Every structure is written in structure tokens, then in C-alpha cells.
Amino acid sequence: MHVTLEQARAFDALARHGTYQRAAEALRKTHGALVHAIKALEAQTDLELLDRRAYRTRLSPAGERILEHCRKLLAAERELHGACAELKTGWEPTLRIVFDGVVPAEPILRVVGQLRREGAPTRFVVWAEFLEGVERAWVRDEMDVMISVLPATTPGLRAMRLPAVRARLVAHKSHPLAKLHHRLGGDELAPHVLITVRGSDPRLQLATSQLDASSTVHLHDFAAKKAAILQGIGFGWMPDHLITRELRRGELVALALEKGSTHSFAPTLYVRDAGKPGRAAQRLIEALKGA
Image 1 (tube, one colour):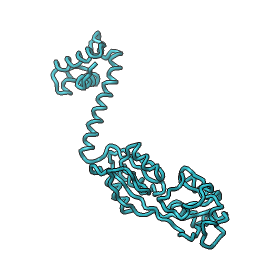
Image 2 (cartoon, helix red, strand yellow):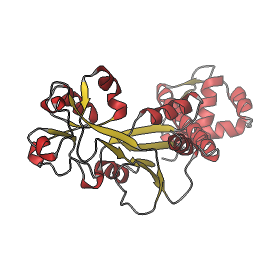
Image 3 (cartoon, helix red, strand yellow):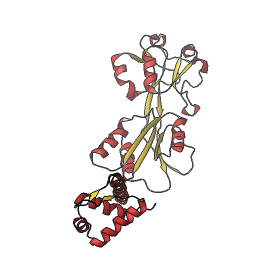
Image 4 (spheres, helix red, strand yellow):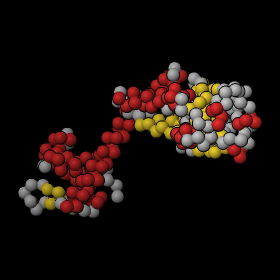
């Protein structure tokens, strides 16, 4: 079967306008050309699409069903034309973003929200991962923008440094470590549970990286990690932007360490070196570099 768009367009026009003459005028075609297109459609489908027994042209039950599919073809054609027009303006059809969950999501979502309000035609996929999982998602799901705190190993990427994300080691106010007011050493931390998100990575060079792995609890994300710390299960590194309120209220206490009381994560934004980022990606990059 080879149903053409012209046949579908002719059948749709006949259904909407009711007569061959009016349908032909709407399409700016001759009466004969419209009749030929409808007969060709019936030949292709091997169905009688019109009830020719009545005075006026009416669709047969089979014609009603085929009309639905013809209109789907025409809708797909309109979508294709729209996508082509969008691409010519520099907007990406889809922008896929993966970022490390230690990085604030709010600046990313702010750009997405602004672009949606402005009517940008780009569809957005925003995904949070952690540590080496960020690059795995980048490769697996063919993402367009990656924000990682670990150096990427994928070749052919262009890198842009973003503002640092500061974190500090914290515990709940009731935790034994919170009651110690001097700088803590590894021997004092070791007996207690260190809470991490999917483990740690030596490339981060955290002051707690030498702690015994047996004292560690691995959780899925920072929301779960924060909840575990607030329940007094253990202590762990948390980015400042997620614990500002709890620190101000005194629910969480920042621990002082011999090796340094804070840690700065250095996120890097990656895009593919081949080709220029589209307009949505450019807006995102500009906003994050200035954040």
C-alpha cells in the first residue's frame, strides 16, 4: 500500500467541504484532479470510501476509519514542517541535561522555566545522577549537556568550569560528634557511621576518604542522606545549599576537622566538541557560568 499525502489531503478536504467542487477550490485543484486522487486512495486501500448511493457525497463506515488515519498523516506532516522551521531558527528539538546531584538544580530549572515561558520550542529532559553515574548516563542516554564533579573520560568533549559548590561535614545536634568542640581527627571519626551518596571517590580528595569503608552507609541521593543525618544515624558531607535552614536553626552542626572543615566541589560543564550548541544549550551555559 502506498497512500500519498496528496491523496490524504484530498480525502480530508472532501470530508470537510462536502462536495468535490468546494474541496477542489479549497485545495486550488481541478475537479478532475480531486476525483482522481480519491479514486487512487480507494484503489490503494481496496475499500469503498464513499457512499455514492445518496444525492450528497458521504463517507462510508470504512471511509470514516480511513479518514482518521489520513488526518494523522497530515498532522505528522505539519509536525515535520514545524520541526524543520524550529531547527532553522537554531532551537534544538530536545535538550537532554544530566548533572551531579551535589550541584544545585535550581539554576538549571530556572533556565528551563524561562525558556518555556518565552515559548521556546525545545523539549527538555533533566536528569540527576552522582559521581561516575553522571558520565554513564551521558553515554548511555546520549545526553547533550553534562555537569560533573569528576573529570570526564569520554573523548571529544568541550569543558567549561562552573562556580564551585561548597560542602561541609555535618551531624545532627544530638550526635556524639556534635558535642565535641575541637578539631576532629580520623581516629575520632572512625567509630561513627559515615553516610555517603552511592559511595565516595578518591578523585574528590575528601578529608574523610581514608575512613574504614565498614563504617559507611551508602544512600541513593542527597535527600535520603540529609534525612539519615537528621535522624542521627551518622555524619556526612552536605552541600551548603541543601542545609542552610538546618544550620541556621541549629538542627545540624558543622564539624571542625584537622584536615579542613569545608570542601569545594568543582563542577565542570561538558558539551560535545563537534558542532555548536543550540540556542537552548547556549542560554543554559551562559546562565550557569554566571551563577
